[in-house]
Length: 415
Image (cartoon, rainbow, N blue to C red; front, side, top):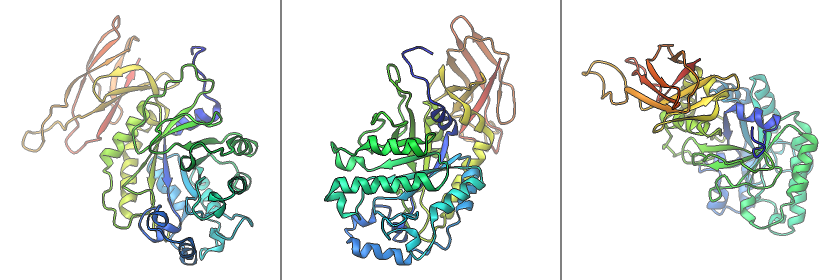
């Protein structure tokens, strides 16, 4: 690698290979079924809103079952809201206040259960933590006192739940230009969790913006990530896209506009095309259950990942360019995968709709002699021609067998 380009640290490199994760927004607001900003948007006084703590029984919350769903979906990690902007904590705040899950009707440390459930299913736990707080008076009063409270809160998470994958902050955009004392916060995290990713969401208006030098990843909220130019950077920073499965981060009882498996699979692939992780959000109900439709969609995506996951997890951007939406990824083991979009089903004219996607696909940048190219799903060999001098490959993409449509199909190049 050129000296002008930084090399990723071990924990960042590990994070990039996770590829696909689950985001969970869940808290008191989930009981209202109006999204995670219900307190703010509906102007609910905190004295009234905090009474939701008394009905937060979470009788259907099963951390291991959620982790098992993530695993079935092909997700390698889960980022859960340990505290959102409403100020309520799903973990034991150990005396900082009584506005937490152990002092609610649940009477449980839900983050302890979350971590245990993740580890039982081989999923890496990540902690979301707000920096914006609608409950703490000091947030709009004595800001230094608030920042001390925030750091004490995060320290509890760092010290009491074993090794975690990372911390995901959100809210600095609420007070632009303010000294958030990030040096102290991130320095504390490094002392207790040296291998944790540190991420701070830049919000909808600052997609992919670089922040504090201790951060390990930039964020792209609700939009496909752009390639990150790392030339001249003093540190290797990676990227992560976060997206809702519908229109709300938290549970929306009347939100029926759920994204299709097709759209979500395409977004997963578009994220990996530029080396970005894809963090897909779900919103459990107030009792802690995952809505059945969301669960079914995740399991469907998992069936796709079962077929093509090796390319998704291990593949990284390379110097090979496809045409249109098609693209290529390479692994450290020198395996090359070609991602093919817009294929049609190959079948009888009376039962298929068009076949314009079948035919030649061109890739540039392949200068190594190719022995064969096969679809990952059925190992069917594809015919191709290669111009080694120009680095041009033209393969003949066959259509899906009748009854099959993977949305994005992956072929492996064998040298």
